[in-house]
Image 1 (cartoon, helix red, strand yellow):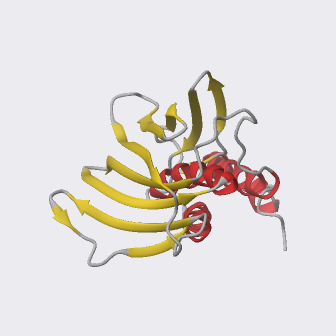
Image 2: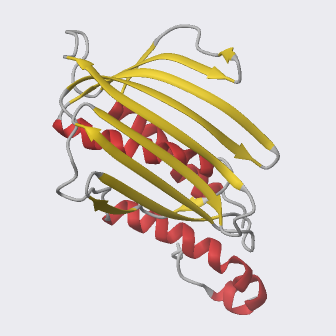
Length: 226
């Protein structure tokens, strides 16, 4: 089977169509290549959040076309050294997965640490080709080893329309209870507008949620309009 990342005979016979598809193909291939060879990484001196139980409150607006939704989530997470870093990745992959539902293909994040502020930037290509690109920017402030504040902004390249933003506050409340090991998540509230959508508390893990977000991102890249 021919490699989809390389133009074949059909592409050579149909140059205008190949040109129209070029950006979508390059973006998708770059995404799969980056996932296969580049791991999500943080600067080695990124401040560590103290191990224990943290309460996370997330407020945001994610817009798609003319539809916008105000959301609020509250959950508990048990953090350890390894899972602390994995939780940084989950919060960015969550935004990537939301954009994948709108057929936007994102590359890997570029991180920069300055004092107690960690920034991450992702470049995304909106589909179909020719539409405005998207930039995701996450700024995390380490208030102390027991508190962090993050803001994720999603902006279209032309700057005229925001695709949404999410503000997250995390505070350590103590040690993890016996039924929560490092990486455990407990979703307690999830409101859409003024309506509570969560019928009961939901347990999960950072690893499980991260795998789900990555699957959504990969599916979005495969099914993006060409």
